[in-house]
Structures are given as structure tokens and as C-alpha cells.
Image 1 (cartoon, rainbow, N blue to C red):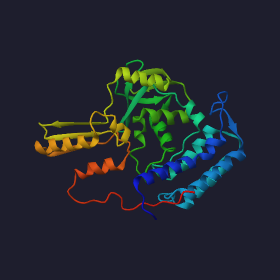
Image 2: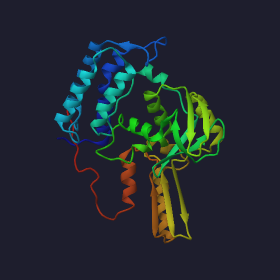
Image 3: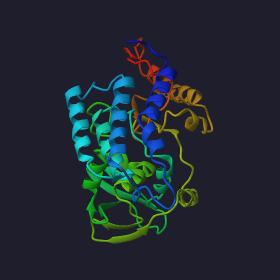
Image 4: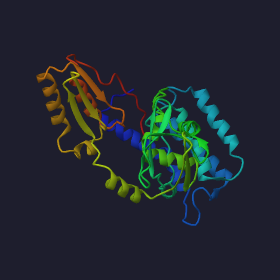
Length: 326
């Protein structure tokens, strides 16, 4: 066991993430004539990659068996090895490996497709969704301006619950946390990526719960960005409000990412100082901190926030474990 500074800790995970799919990225060169879901690779190459992947995890991942015992992980690798009994596309192989990775239950460990393959996944929904109370809502329709916040029943005749469960099976979370899994639909970039890994569609039939059918086609990331700029105000990563009548203050922090928070008109540290100063001056007794869209980032931003919520000394990390990275 060793103690790490956070930057060293982050660097370790970046190295692990690179190593995990090193062999896939460089063993799977693709050409424009052979999209990732068409080109096949020989059985022996796929098995060699899977063995290399398992060896890499065992060598460098400090928490490989924290949540799933070694016997279970070994069994998953063995079962997947038996399933590789013929040539496969990268897409088919990737989905098998991603399912193994998800079983580790480490939110910082994931698999990424090879660079040229990811270019084929740049198709985007011209729509955005929100998951709320076990239902998926259409929240934005950039190309047609359909009235938002209608319940979505299916995409291309596949029920939304099935799509969410299929994606969840390929994405790990920390420990056994269940809540983040359906929330993938709230991030249009991530949802689009994972959806197209499973379904290489370019057009979509969206069935709403009220029976309405929407026909949409995929758009490029550039086109989606253009629509967003035209139809949305600038996104705020940090904002607050004070409701005097309810004696309540609301602090919304949509990111702990350094670059995103720096893009705002006022620094994160100054914003917190002014916000909590105002709360104290006005005698506000109720505080709501909204982190629902916060995907994480720098730990010092989270620890700084917590310093305003306690008058006690606190330990942010009890301990860290690592393995030497070859």
C-alpha cells in the first residue's frame, strides 16, 4: 500500500486506461473502406488480445478484485475466451471485453474503441433526453422543435429500458451503485456513443408514450454543436439562487473540472466565498446543493466545498492503494 498525491493518482489511472486497450488500439488498424462493424479479425488474434488484457489488469489494477472476486473474474475471462470461436468484428469483440470491464465495478476503469473506430461513432442524436422517476423524457429536439418533455417509449422499436440495461452492462460504476446507470441518457454525447456501439443506426424511429412517432436521422458533432449554440444560452457550470420566501439557498455545481469551471465569469473559489457570505448575512437556514449533472473532476474543488459545510477537521482520503506501473 502506498499513499499518493491526487495528481499521481489520476496519472496512474490515465496510464492504466491507456494500457488496458493498448493491444486493441494497435492490433486493429481500420480503413475507410472497412468500417469497424464490418471488418473481421482472426480468432487467434482476438484470443491473444484478451489474454494480454487480462494480464494487464492483473498487473497494474490495484482494485481489480475489490468488488468481484478473482474466481468470478477468471470465470468471465474463461467464458469469453470460449465464445471467441470464429472471426469477429471489433464491435463484437469490444462489447464482450467491455462487459468484463464493467464487472470490475471501478468507475475509473473503462474500455475505449480504437481511434479509427471511434470516428465511425461520431454520429449524434439530434435529440436530448432526461431520465426522471423511471422514465425517459425527450428534453430537446434540435432539428424539428418538437414540444419537449414527452415520455419516450422506444428507439427503432427497442424499449428504452432495454437500451439502458444493454448500455449499463458495458459500463462500470463504483462498487454496486445503481443510480448512475440510467442517467447515461442525460449525457447526450455518452449516450450517443454507447447506443451506436450496440446499434450502428443512422436513422431513428422514436416512439413516444402518447403514440406519436418521430423520424430523425443522425447528425455530425459539428452540426449538433451548431444547433446547440443557436437554440441554447451558454451552459453554466456554476450558478446559485437564494429564495428569500422559502428561506432557502440553492447552489448548483455542474462540474468539478478545472477547465470548465475556469470558463465561467468568476473563479470557483471566489464564487463559493461570496455565496456562503451572502447566505450567512441573510440568515438563510436551508441549503440545497445540486450536483445531479456533475461528472466529477478535481478533488480539491469538492474538498473546498465541504469545508464550508463543517466546522470539524475531516479526512478526505483514508488511504489509497496502488501497484507499481511497469
